[in-house]
Length: 168
Ligand SMILES: [Zn+2]
Image 1 (tube, rainbow, N blue to C red):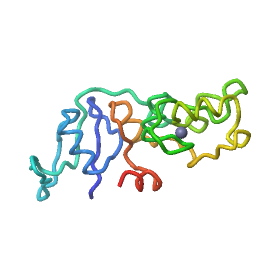
Image 2 (image 1 turned 120 degrees about the vertical axis):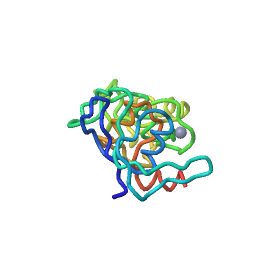
Image 3 (image 1 turned 90 degrees about the horizontal axis):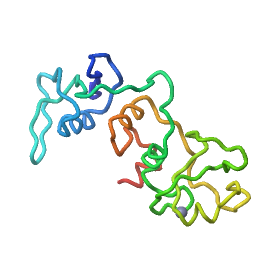
Image 4 (image 1 turned 90 degrees about the vertical axis):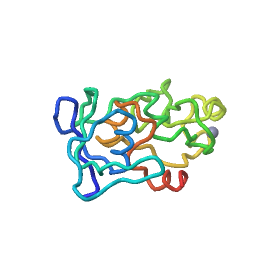
């Protein structure tokens, strides 16, 4: 009941997001409320709106929802919340776990956010060779995450435990 259905601008159902995320999209003018819960309101310091049951995006997004999100450097940084996979400090670069020079691909599972220092230090080595274990495993975004990325969001919908703990 607390999940909100998201429709594309074309009214095609895309995904569900949490109620909080739906409200944020509405407040950011990225979506409009198509249908609200009759007796539930979202109240905050400057907000008092009916809780959206269905929202529709203001702009059409083209996302391959049945497949994985297209890989991008920005997407990897968003996924990892700009935290370095090797030291946990702020990351500004994307590191290939298996280096590109050794056949590593631009994929979600082979790339992690990394600080420039660690990226440089690791160079053309695997984490094992470099003695730099990953603090966490890379993962593929969900369809809801893919939609949020396409909308320009800077956070994924469902944070994995290790990130939720960091964020708290
Ligand atoms: Zn680092």
